[in-house]
Amino acid sequence: MAVRPDGRRPGDGCYELGTPVTGGNVSFYNQTGDVPIHPTPLVGVLGIIEDVSRRIPSGWQDEGQNIYLLGTTSTELSGSAWADTVHQHLGGLPPAVDLAAEKRLAGLIAAARDEWLISSAHDVSEGGLGQAIAEGVMRFGVGARVWLTELMDRDGVDAASALFSESTGRVIVTVPREDDVKFRGLCEGRNYPVLRIGVTDTVADLEVTGLFTVSAAELRSTSQATLPAAFGATVSEPVA
Image 1 (tube, rainbow, N blue to C red):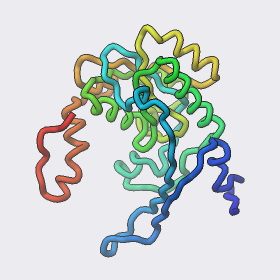
Image 2 (image 1 turned 90 degrees about the horizontal axis):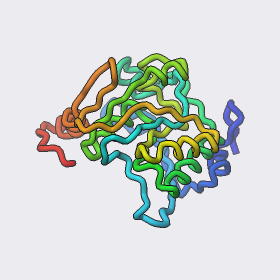
Image 3 (image 1 turned 60 degrees about the horizontal axis):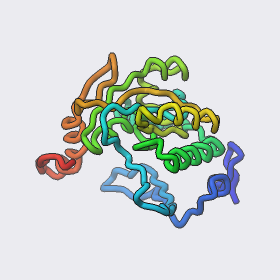
């Protein structure tokens, strides 16, 4: 089995997380006309939800709940959606991966679910925190008011990195206010970084304090317009 320069082997993640890979595909050479596609490794993984009624939605449905960020943020913008969109550049090193931390995070989310402490959970991955929050708002049309000052101070990052870094090991969750103390205690007991970064709002907007405000309708329209625009079609009324 090949060993990468950082000493990891391809199967290390499977062993560390106890997760089998059921299949996958890597496309390096496909192209449209003279334009090659980006390399696209795809890994297939299966999981079991023992009780589907206890699944955690990816977006929040109720106002007045606290939004927490689990994990820490580093200035890891190389190869990110931000770098591609703003600078048309996808080079550099990918975000560092801490498999032990990923395992602790998965255990924390499962424990919070079992104790009914969280009402939604969304991974922070492609597009960073900004994309995750936007998708949380779009899911059910419930807004969010977010602040970044404490995050920037704690992790030593600027606003761009706070919003668009693709650092791993991060999830945003919403917590009903009556469960706030228990949830914080669970995070502390499992030694996982946690920071309150916002609240869900009655107004169907995404507001990042001091930076911008955008409506859920505009977010959804932009998100859904990509393919119709490419084929010359128009976007109909958004579906909730």
